[in-house]
Length: 326
Image (cartoon, rainbow, N blue to C red; front, side):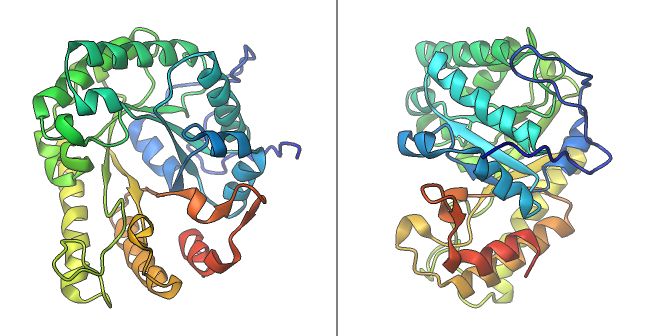
């Protein structure tokens, strides 16, 4: 399918810079501008798993854009070799050409599991290579340093801060004004934002990313993420975390973004009906957007059939809630 040139209509949009040597006017994007540009989006597997990489087509970008979504969070843990860079080139170019803001999110698995000098250097080299490759691409491409802090590093704030410091320094050598996005400890819990140190070298182009029900709600009454009918207590569990994110944002004057939330427990049985997911999603979206926080649903493959190039019909009521077309 041929690419369709649909450019972002918001006043904060900036002119694009092509990936393969073609240049046009571009300027740095402030974090406050970027917060507006991110809007509603999806986490995507376009550079994550082999089957999804092979099945990718620009139709996915066009489908996302056609329903009014503004951003995608492109996750990857693959080595920064020519293969991955080629994959990322096509995805990022497709996004920029069609008015979708791409967030490139690295999964530093080795460092998360075993934070030491060797695994830290691996991560620094990964970002050094990627940053050099994309240094002349539009500032609408932003770098999310790590998808989510889990395992050993996720419980070690010093390890996280050291990672952020070293990787930021590597990126800033070639990308002095590109936005870098930082994530707090404990699976990107907003309660840990206050313990996170943003490196000085990040300068004025820093944002923070946190998660909220990234693996969805639970039907287990003993879970902190329990959701049944949307009682006041269940709603408060959501709004309390949003309040934490907003408070940190105001205190530090650093815009934030929810990089992952999920309306069903797809990874643990998927026992929420579409109707129940719609109710949960409606409250989540209204709460986030009332607070001025953009978001990304985890993840597009739950709603879009990449092998048949269409939205899953049974999920359309939920997709309409996401897009505001319900």
